[in-house]
Length: 157
View (cartoon, rainbow, N blue to C red):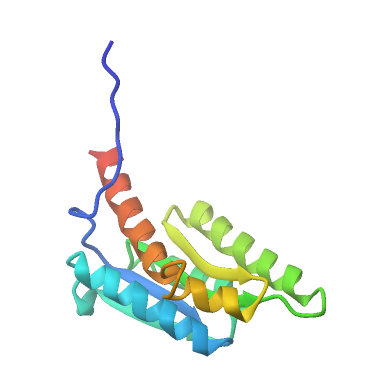
């Protein structure tokens, strides 16, 4: 018995990428953006194939991602933001809507949308996930997007 395995890689992931970035919690999100841009560049994606779209915050990310997906110019979209828990239920609403929104757009428009929106309990956790102890989730989202671009190409081949 021979099993066929289809997966993506980072060699055939060249393409067009849009990164949608929330400005709220900018001190964290800018590090996510730097990580994503660095990962794309290190894997051969040239600067002219990347655009950055800035929105006010994580809640606004899904609409911008939808508008980008409607343009059909990109191979993948990367969503970056940070929602940090506070003393109100606002955290649950924003994190749920932003995560659910980007996931739905991926399915509706048949395009990889990598979710790099941090949903954390504290500023310390946000800082850890934006380039210190826990790595850089922006870079991880970019890697996920590139792998999905490659995977989809391999599935179509």
